[in-house]
Length: 270
Image (cartoon, rainbow, N blue to C red):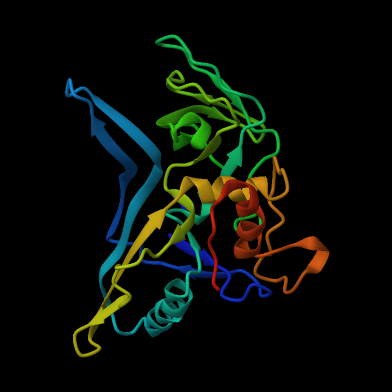
Protein backbone atom coordinates (compact mmCIF):
# COMPACT_ATOMS: atom_id res chain seq x y z
CA UNK A 1 0.00 0.00 0.00
CA UNK A 2 1.23 3.47 -0.84
CA UNK A 3 1.38 6.44 1.50
CA UNK A 4 -1.14 9.30 1.80
CA UNK A 5 0.09 12.04 -0.54
CA UNK A 6 -0.63 15.68 -1.38
CA UNK A 7 0.00 16.88 -4.96
CA UNK A 8 0.39 20.53 -5.95
CA UNK A 9 1.95 23.04 -8.36
CA UNK A 10 3.08 26.04 -6.27
CA UNK A 11 4.50 27.65 -9.43
CA UNK A 12 2.40 27.44 -12.58
CA UNK A 13 5.56 26.98 -14.64
CA UNK A 14 7.16 24.68 -12.10
CA UNK A 15 7.17 20.94 -11.55
CA UNK A 16 4.80 18.84 -9.49
CA UNK A 17 5.50 18.92 -5.74
CA UNK A 18 4.37 16.19 -3.36
CA UNK A 19 4.06 15.84 0.40
CA UNK A 20 4.05 12.27 1.68
CA UNK A 21 2.70 11.16 5.06
CA UNK A 22 4.87 8.12 5.67
CA UNK A 23 3.22 7.48 9.05
CA UNK A 24 -0.32 7.76 7.74
CA UNK A 25 -3.03 10.21 8.80
CA UNK A 26 -5.47 10.26 11.71
CA UNK A 27 -8.62 11.47 9.99
CA UNK A 28 -9.99 11.83 6.47
CA UNK A 29 -13.64 12.92 6.28
CA UNK A 30 -15.63 13.74 3.14
CA UNK A 31 -19.09 15.28 3.76
CA UNK A 32 -21.59 16.29 1.02
CA UNK A 33 -22.38 19.99 0.87
CA UNK A 34 -25.19 20.43 -1.73
CA UNK A 35 -25.84 23.91 -3.07
CA UNK A 36 -29.62 24.27 -3.26
CA UNK A 37 -32.57 26.43 -2.35
CA UNK A 38 -36.13 25.37 -1.49
CA UNK A 39 -39.25 27.38 -2.26
CA UNK A 40 -42.84 26.60 -1.28
CA UNK A 41 -46.05 27.35 -3.15
CA UNK A 42 -49.39 28.30 -1.66
CA UNK A 43 -50.17 24.61 -1.21
CA UNK A 44 -46.85 24.25 0.70
CA UNK A 45 -45.50 21.71 -1.75
CA UNK A 46 -41.73 22.20 -1.96
CA UNK A 47 -39.74 22.90 -5.10
CA UNK A 48 -35.96 22.71 -5.05
CA UNK A 49 -33.49 24.63 -7.19
CA UNK A 50 -30.29 22.59 -7.27
CA UNK A 51 -27.14 24.53 -8.15
CA UNK A 52 -24.46 21.90 -7.73
CA UNK A 53 -22.52 19.77 -5.30
CA UNK A 54 -19.42 20.39 -3.25
CA UNK A 55 -17.88 18.29 -0.49
CA UNK A 56 -16.35 19.42 2.79
CA UNK A 57 -13.07 17.60 3.37
CA UNK A 58 -11.06 17.39 6.58
CA UNK A 59 -7.58 15.82 6.72
CA UNK A 60 -5.62 15.67 9.94
CA UNK A 61 -2.70 14.12 11.77
CA UNK A 62 -3.37 14.31 15.51
CA UNK A 63 0.18 14.00 16.76
CA UNK A 64 3.62 13.42 15.35
CA UNK A 65 6.89 13.99 17.12
CA UNK A 66 8.98 17.05 16.46
CA UNK A 67 11.75 15.00 14.92
CA UNK A 68 9.84 14.92 11.64
CA UNK A 69 10.62 18.57 10.93
CA UNK A 70 10.76 18.07 7.16
CA UNK A 71 7.02 17.26 7.16
CA UNK A 72 6.26 20.25 9.36
CA UNK A 73 8.17 22.59 7.03
CA UNK A 74 6.47 21.13 3.96
CA UNK A 75 3.02 21.66 5.45
CA UNK A 76 3.86 25.26 6.29
CA UNK A 77 5.02 25.79 2.70
CA UNK A 78 1.58 25.03 1.26
CA UNK A 79 -0.16 27.63 3.45
CA UNK A 80 0.58 30.49 1.05
CA UNK A 81 -0.44 28.37 -1.94
CA UNK A 82 -3.87 27.57 -0.49
CA UNK A 83 -4.46 31.06 0.91
CA UNK A 84 -3.89 32.57 -2.55
CA UNK A 85 -6.46 30.26 -4.15
CA UNK A 86 -4.17 27.47 -5.29
CA UNK A 87 -5.50 23.93 -5.52
CA UNK A 88 -4.07 20.59 -4.43
CA UNK A 89 -4.86 16.93 -4.96
CA UNK A 90 -4.92 14.30 -2.22
CA UNK A 91 -4.88 10.51 -2.24
CA UNK A 92 -5.05 8.23 0.74
CA UNK A 93 -2.87 5.79 -1.19
CA UNK A 94 -0.29 7.01 -3.71
CA UNK A 95 -0.34 3.60 -5.39
CA UNK A 96 -4.05 4.11 -6.18
CA UNK A 97 -3.97 7.73 -7.36
CA UNK A 98 -6.24 6.86 -10.27
CA UNK A 99 -9.17 8.59 -11.99
CA UNK A 100 -10.46 8.38 -15.55
CA UNK A 101 -13.30 9.74 -17.63
CA UNK A 102 -15.26 6.87 -19.11
CA UNK A 103 -15.21 6.26 -22.85
CA UNK A 104 -18.73 4.81 -22.93
CA UNK A 105 -21.94 5.79 -21.14
CA UNK A 106 -22.90 3.36 -18.35
CA UNK A 107 -26.46 2.05 -18.48
CA UNK A 108 -28.87 1.78 -15.55
CA UNK A 109 -28.78 -1.87 -14.54
CA UNK A 110 -31.12 -4.41 -13.00
CA UNK A 111 -30.71 -5.47 -9.38
CA UNK A 112 -27.91 -7.98 -9.10
CA UNK A 113 -26.20 -6.96 -12.33
CA UNK A 114 -22.45 -6.36 -12.49
CA UNK A 115 -21.91 -3.70 -15.16
CA UNK A 116 -18.73 -3.32 -17.16
CA UNK A 117 -17.55 0.28 -17.60
CA UNK A 118 -14.96 1.31 -20.15
CA UNK A 119 -12.05 3.67 -19.54
CA UNK A 120 -9.78 2.88 -22.46
CA UNK A 121 -7.80 6.11 -22.11
CA UNK A 122 -6.43 5.01 -18.76
CA UNK A 123 -5.45 7.05 -15.71
CA UNK A 124 -5.83 10.79 -16.18
CA UNK A 125 -3.27 11.42 -13.44
CA UNK A 126 -0.46 9.27 -14.73
CA UNK A 127 1.96 12.17 -14.19
CA UNK A 128 1.27 12.00 -10.47
CA UNK A 129 1.58 8.25 -9.98
CA UNK A 130 2.98 6.45 -13.02
CA UNK A 131 2.41 2.95 -11.59
CA UNK A 132 -1.02 3.56 -10.03
CA UNK A 133 -3.47 0.70 -10.48
CA UNK A 134 -6.72 -0.49 -8.95
CA UNK A 135 -7.74 -4.04 -8.10
CA UNK A 136 -10.76 -6.17 -7.25
CA UNK A 137 -12.46 -5.08 -4.00
CA UNK A 138 -11.13 -1.51 -4.22
CA UNK A 139 -13.77 1.13 -3.46
CA UNK A 140 -14.51 3.52 -6.33
CA UNK A 141 -16.86 6.38 -7.14
CA UNK A 142 -18.83 6.88 -10.33
CA UNK A 143 -19.36 10.63 -10.56
CA UNK A 144 -21.37 12.74 -13.00
CA UNK A 145 -21.24 16.41 -13.99
CA UNK A 146 -23.93 19.09 -13.82
CA UNK A 147 -25.97 17.45 -16.60
CA UNK A 148 -26.63 14.48 -14.31
CA UNK A 149 -27.17 16.74 -11.28
CA UNK A 150 -23.78 15.58 -9.96
CA UNK A 151 -25.02 12.05 -9.38
CA UNK A 152 -22.55 10.03 -7.34
CA UNK A 153 -22.39 6.30 -6.68
CA UNK A 154 -19.97 4.57 -4.33
CA UNK A 155 -19.31 0.94 -5.19
CA UNK A 156 -16.56 -1.67 -5.29
CA UNK A 157 -14.75 -3.37 -8.13
CA UNK A 158 -15.44 -6.98 -8.99
CA UNK A 159 -12.58 -6.86 -11.47
CA UNK A 160 -10.24 -4.25 -12.92
CA UNK A 161 -8.12 -3.93 -16.04
CA UNK A 162 -6.39 -0.91 -17.53
CA UNK A 163 -9.14 -0.43 -20.14
CA UNK A 164 -12.31 -1.54 -18.30
CA UNK A 165 -13.74 -2.41 -14.89
CA UNK A 166 -16.54 -4.61 -13.59
CA UNK A 167 -18.56 -2.99 -10.81
CA UNK A 168 -19.98 -4.91 -7.86
CA UNK A 169 -23.30 -3.04 -7.94
CA UNK A 170 -25.68 -2.02 -10.73
CA UNK A 171 -25.66 1.56 -11.97
CA UNK A 172 -28.52 3.51 -10.40
CA UNK A 173 -28.39 6.89 -12.15
CA UNK A 174 -28.55 8.05 -15.74
CA UNK A 175 -25.50 9.85 -17.12
CA UNK A 176 -26.14 11.96 -20.24
CA UNK A 177 -22.42 12.74 -20.48
CA UNK A 178 -19.32 10.67 -19.70
CA UNK A 179 -18.90 10.34 -15.93
CA UNK A 180 -15.69 9.91 -13.99
CA UNK A 181 -14.54 6.74 -12.31
CA UNK A 182 -12.00 7.26 -9.54
CA UNK A 183 -10.51 5.60 -6.49
CA UNK A 184 -12.87 6.59 -3.71
CA UNK A 185 -10.16 8.10 -1.53
CA UNK A 186 -8.49 10.13 -4.27
CA UNK A 187 -9.75 13.72 -4.62
CA UNK A 188 -7.95 15.35 -7.55
CA UNK A 189 -8.91 19.00 -7.01
CA UNK A 190 -9.20 20.52 -3.53
CA UNK A 191 -9.21 24.16 -2.49
CA UNK A 192 -9.39 26.03 0.80
CA UNK A 193 -12.74 27.82 1.19
CA UNK A 194 -13.01 31.25 2.69
CA UNK A 195 -13.43 31.12 6.44
CA UNK A 196 -11.41 27.92 6.84
CA UNK A 197 -8.55 27.98 9.32
CA UNK A 198 -5.30 28.93 7.61
CA UNK A 199 -3.19 27.71 10.54
CA UNK A 200 -2.37 24.22 9.31
CA UNK A 201 0.12 23.24 12.02
CA UNK A 202 -0.32 23.22 15.80
CA UNK A 203 2.41 22.45 18.31
CA UNK A 204 3.04 22.16 22.05
CA UNK A 205 6.42 23.83 22.50
CA UNK A 206 7.77 22.00 19.45
CA UNK A 207 7.61 18.67 21.21
CA UNK A 208 4.63 17.30 19.28
CA UNK A 209 2.93 18.61 16.18
CA UNK A 210 -0.57 18.34 14.78
CA UNK A 211 -1.82 19.02 11.28
CA UNK A 212 -5.34 19.90 10.15
CA UNK A 213 -6.59 20.95 6.75
CA UNK A 214 -10.13 22.13 5.93
CA UNK A 215 -10.82 21.90 2.21
CA UNK A 216 -13.59 21.60 -0.36
CA UNK A 217 -13.79 19.15 -3.24
CA UNK A 218 -15.62 20.33 -6.36
CA UNK A 219 -16.38 17.69 -9.03
CA UNK A 220 -16.86 20.46 -11.62
CA UNK A 221 -13.18 21.29 -11.33
CA UNK A 222 -12.18 17.73 -12.22
CA UNK A 223 -14.44 17.82 -15.28
CA UNK A 224 -12.85 21.16 -16.20
CA UNK A 225 -9.45 19.46 -16.22
CA UNK A 226 -10.63 16.80 -18.64
CA UNK A 227 -12.58 19.25 -20.81
CA UNK A 228 -9.57 21.55 -21.23
CA UNK A 229 -8.39 19.50 -24.19
CA UNK A 230 -11.10 16.91 -24.62
CA UNK A 231 -8.92 14.25 -23.00
CA UNK A 232 -9.98 10.65 -22.52
CA UNK A 233 -6.71 9.46 -21.04
CA UNK A 234 -3.61 10.73 -19.29
CA UNK A 235 -3.81 14.49 -18.79
CA UNK A 236 -0.67 16.29 -19.99
CA UNK A 237 0.24 17.46 -16.50
CA UNK A 238 3.83 18.09 -15.52
CA UNK A 239 5.54 15.52 -13.33
CA UNK A 240 8.05 16.21 -10.55
CA UNK A 241 10.95 16.28 -13.03
CA UNK A 242 9.55 18.53 -15.76
CA UNK A 243 9.68 22.33 -15.53
CA UNK A 244 8.14 24.85 -17.88
CA UNK A 245 6.03 24.27 -20.97
CA UNK A 246 7.90 21.15 -22.05
CA UNK A 247 6.04 19.26 -24.79
CA UNK A 248 2.82 21.15 -24.08
CA UNK A 249 2.65 19.94 -20.48
CA UNK A 250 0.99 22.18 -17.90
CA UNK A 251 0.20 22.57 -14.22
CA UNK A 252 -3.22 21.83 -12.76
CA UNK A 253 -3.99 25.56 -12.39
CA UNK A 254 -3.18 26.21 -16.05
CA UNK A 255 -5.54 23.47 -17.19
CA UNK A 256 -8.30 24.64 -14.86
CA UNK A 257 -8.12 28.11 -16.39
CA UNK A 258 -8.51 26.59 -19.85
CA UNK A 259 -11.29 24.22 -18.81
CA UNK A 260 -13.16 26.87 -16.85
CA UNK A 261 -13.84 28.83 -20.05
CA UNK A 262 -16.45 26.22 -20.91
CA UNK A 263 -17.41 24.96 -17.46
CA UNK A 264 -17.68 28.30 -15.57
CA UNK A 265 -15.39 26.91 -12.85
CA UNK A 266 -12.55 29.26 -11.96
CA UNK A 267 -9.69 28.19 -9.71
CA UNK A 268 -6.04 28.97 -9.35
CA UNK A 269 -3.79 31.60 -7.85
CA UNK A 270 -4.45 35.12 -9.04
